[in-house]
Amino acid sequence: MKLPLGFGGIVEGLRRSTVVISGHRGGMGSGAVIDAGGTIVTNNHVVRSPHVEVQFWDGRTFRAEVRSRDAARDLALLSVPASGLPAAPVGDSSKLRVGELVVAVGNPLGFIGAVTTGVVHAIGQVSGLGPTAWVQSDLQLAPGNSGGPLADAMGRLVGINTMIYGQLALALPGNVVRRFAASQEPGESLGVTLRPVPLAVNGVRQLGLLLLEVADGGTAHAASLMPGDIVVAIGGKSVQSVEDLECAIEGRGERVVHLQFVRGDRTTLRSASVLLGAGRSRAA
Image (tube, rainbow, N blue to C red; front, side, top):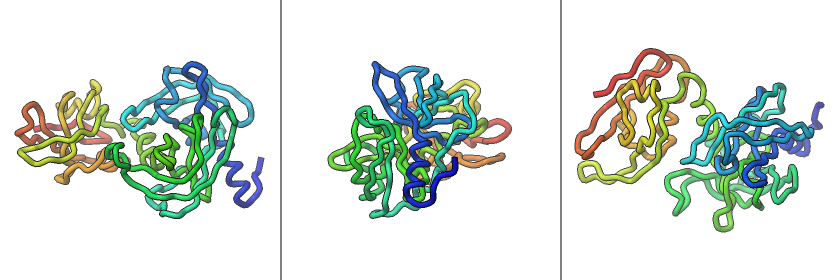
């Protein structure tokens, strides 16, 4: 069905791209369709089990499989056996500006497809919530909005609504969501689970990326990286956030990412040249 022009039509399109997720102990959350072939993104805390029930705007219900999780940033990808779904286009969240209009759709307190609007107050880190950058707005959200889309005035997904902190609604930026989804494609992932940690290397305090898990057969494993290693620099530049690594590995085709990391007593800086897209990786 062709939607009417104007803001109302844009919002209706966003509602059709928003799903109801039913799962843990009868709880309800939201999700956003980002691919017509059945890919849905939501918050990790919304999906506590490997499979959940997903309901679409037209009443159809599917059993969805949790394809991937990122507990550190509270994201999860779901798959449903469907095609031709109304997908929300993922926009460039780096272009958001303070004062810009944003729209959220979700299922708060059992109200299906509820819409709320507000303006962006800030974009960046929030005191007490670590190094993650957030889209911070004055939207009125409630339990059940988690995992639903935050969109700009053109209907482009620029965030995934995650929590209320103080008086502001916090959403994970759309660029983080896009890179998370892209990292699940073949050849686009290092095959690691990581967590940002503060540390001191040779007396200098900085941020590092602690490798909690290294998947067998992945590119990080091929580079002899191990659980417990801490990435401290990428291409010679000190790590500032998890997004630094995501930006470094983003892309298509054969490419090399140079990582510097510490192991054990953290006094020796080691290096790994990770070849993505083809071949094997090397560590030193």
